[in-house]
Length: 125
Length: 383
Image (tube, rainbow over all chains, first blue to last red; front, top):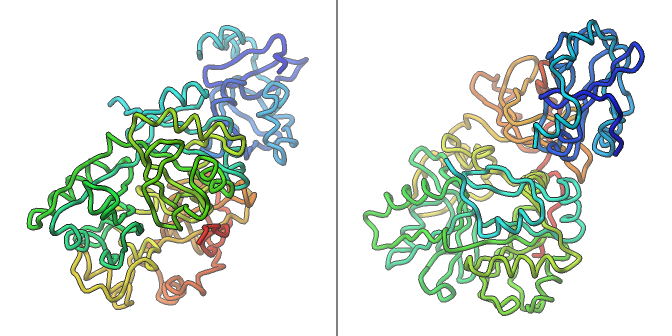
């Protein structure tokens, strides 16, 4: 598994990566490991707007449904359609399986409470 | 409250199982993954630690008469070495627990009958049964802390048991049990399970747990299976789970267990009036349990609301993806009070109820589902 440089993680187990003027949002490897086999993903519509910490997606493992929170406020510009038919891709590689790409409102401000990957792992273990 | 641990706790940790709290016990929910464990059980064999289940011994001059008074089933028809699926009913006909009763005369010295009950219900069952026993010459002993239990389930299970020393023709038949030595370890070997597959349940003293677990897992046809896959396996086989499909306010007939209720049992038992008159269709059902399959791709989970023609009619009691079918399945309890008569009569008729379209509310949206025939998969018991 490849952990991209510059990734930031939330305490609710989402990751964000700023790439140009877009921000990719996904689920951390630790969260994915806890969930086990992912069998269903419900993603938001393009153009929908979310504030920081708002629920924007649902991921279901065999056992349970989990709500996914937006780590930074923004507008969805792209959703990862591949995951709809192949949700198991998230298990295979959580960091390349982004859920949505968003146009962030104020990434600097919103990302202040997020953790570097190593600090995040330290925190959850 | 600290959770109890089975004698195999350290073995689960060694295998890096994910542990969860279940019915007061710390149990493995999965080892390598629920779907893999599920499929392996259907195709080969899975080994489950079910030591959290409870064992009660019933012995005494009145043991038969006493058991007859506890359950709607006919214990007098249960021959030595045979087992029977029963419900422990209360005075209102509700289910206190579901359990398997073994006629252990001549097999277990200290028990005329062995009763295996759900983990979360052990203490409640014991005091419920004890209270009912006052006027009977009978002794009830809770042996749960002395025993461990393994379930070996799947089409290869009988070959594994053969390799462990019991030839196939010597193995007990479906819903029978016998005393046996597996790799020189004394066990009660039962032909039963909770997956819809052929398989065995092994009951033995705690001291043998690690050896038997390790030995059984040494065969490449066997993998350890956690509670996650146990749940999807039992759901596909449409086997109810206490506290979900079954509860103290709902009768066996309403819980779609009418098949297990004899019409002609002479002896009295708790709740007999209502259970029997429901069985004979003399008293209307207040609610009924149905199996459903989602038409849409979403998963209906326990507690989600069920609708018919935009009217809320009940709740999902269990729901999960079915790895075998690739569909999302579940059970729901439909409340009959307030429904029009035509619909109720359709729901009361098994043939007519199949195919009825219902909707299930998932995250504030309604999705389509259909009432389907039980079980979801064909059971493969070796009968």
